[in-house]
Image 1 (tube, helix red, strand yellow):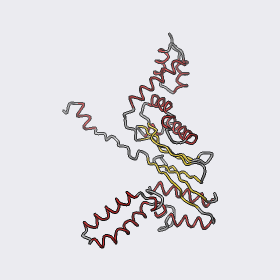
Image 2 (tube, rainbow, N blue to C red):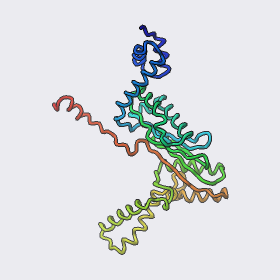
Image 3 (tube, helix red, strand yellow):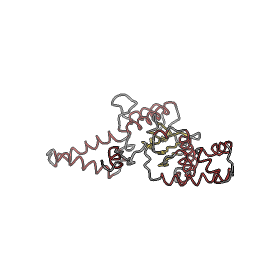
Length: 294
């Protein structure tokens, strides 16, 4: 059966698949467009399965405050930064954000897997919906995405009055979280195992310096105080404030100026690819393997 260029174009417009893939699907389906779409979907699933084992550590993280005030944060990975700039890939990420906003973050990868499989077949790289979070629109939510989409933050503030001063504080605090990567909000939120680990590290260092036991016990609280200053959001010096001014001090100033309590009730920070073990390319080893070590 003769397959026309217009049929190939129509199938390509509907699926985004390559021209040769569309022609093959039309030949297999004897020119039936609906059947050709199904052929391409099956082929796409097979391609996606083959690519599933390939490391996907590039991509992008994105955050957005949706129209209803819901805060959404997602990370979607691909294999190269070239694909991360692809409009189809970015449209896929946008659809994921909408899904998370509407249905929550749980099992979001399964909810969009059909679209992901089709995109893998079209783009030719492994794509992984790695993680997502959502803050409900029951408080003041803020979001920040660092240029390049490699770091993104969502922040939740309870209380306040929605004033310009509060909005400015929330935006600045989001930027600070992106830049300084705090572990948690305050010392009260630091997990007990982390505190014990810091105590052990401090103790080992002081013993190595020959400090007596009685002195070590007096020094450790000061070490912990320094740890809190370095890793707890409200104890950190504000990235957007004057030198030496902490985020807690700026929060206190805000509360005093608007005469309404405000609390930092949560934040989440994503950094692209954190925790993913990336494959280290060794060109010399690859060439040696191809030439039998010659």
